[in-house]
Length: 189
Image (cartoon, rainbow, N blue to C red):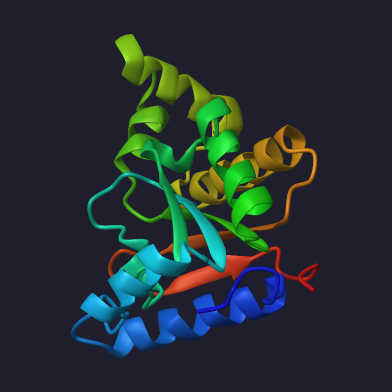
């Protein structure tokens, strides 16, 4: 898997898109998780072709959704797929040190964090998360639109927070059908 410095953002997107097509039709993940692949990734280091920033929801499993194996995706998970300093640092690491050419912010249907934000304020650390989501979605009451707005807000946070950001696109994962709808793909090279 010689991904570093070789694969374009367009090719990375196509791998994700075709992997999702296989996932929708599959009964199990066909990503390479073999003993040989594990040994190769230790010997040669990780060479992911894409960064996926997604929710911590246990139903959202990027490696499965994109039919990926060990070392193919650099996954950052945080409830509500929000972006803060640690997420920015992780993306920056993947871009600058691992050569990832594409970052995907992956929202999903039936998101508990988004639903909580649409319901109003919360206390404690959850309140910080809810406030971050509310700062993006405002008073939006339609869950599908709010999800897309939240993803777009995270994309803006990445583009504003990383000096040399790679290509950044949005996507929504339908937890029922398994399909991923990508958007903002026109500028991929």
